[in-house]
Image: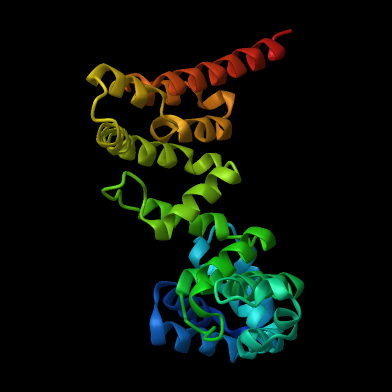
Amino acid sequence: MKRYALVILCALSLPLGGFGQDLRETLQAAAAATGDRYLALRNQIVEKGPAAVPELERILKDERIDWHERAMAGIAIERIQKGGEIDAFVNHNWEDDPRLKDDVGWKTPIAAPLGMGQLAVEQLVHDRLANYSLEQIWKQTAEHPRLGRRWQETFQKACEELKPPFFVHLAREKVANLQISSLGVPYIEGNWYYEYLLRVRDRESLPLLFDLWLKARPIRRALAVERYRESNPHRSEEDIQRFADKSLSVDGRLRLLLAAAGTEDEQWILEKLKDVDLSEIGRRYLEEYRARCRAATQQQQP
């Protein structure tokens, strides 16, 4: 009797669908892979078909599992369930789309790529291809040859609208890998993700966004001073420094950072800014934020 009970217990502990550890290992390998190896591993998962969906859904919903693996599960489920829609999107000739030709505004060489991108976003949203859009940004599989050079912008916009479950995680990861260029801003490839995290007011990434801004700030200020000096060679040094103190290019982004912050963030924000010589504009933004914190605290008091 004990033997049968043990067998039943072991059977119940196995993942649904009978795919077991093999599926988990393939998902993990695909999450870490790139290029042709990624495509081979992803297709290996998708080829398991609808029978694998229950186990993939279990993995997708399990918050104890790393988000990369869970995202791969979502990508596989969508490809199993919406393979036809994905193939239709990939094979569609956006350049010859009749909607593009009927609209006079999209016929110019400059506007045509914008029109293609807009139509593609509309199609992705219509078909609810959220995980496919996430996959293209994350894995950059280049499985969209007809979209041209605006492919990344297309999938970014689709992700922002469709909100795939792990897009914020991917944006955080991209921002964490940014470098500061000589212009004092994150490299352009990642700048969109920085702005996206600010737009959605992702508080978890806020300390990282602050750190990147603080690293870029001295370079921004030096450039503002240099450009003003070159265009106004007869201005005194005092006037030049006064200009920098009022330039939005130095502390303009601080307003967005503080808008994303809650009252509970006040202490660590003040700690980060305590040795920063803020411009006049920056000081004003900080005082507005502190006033908001004081007002919120007073409202909470009985």
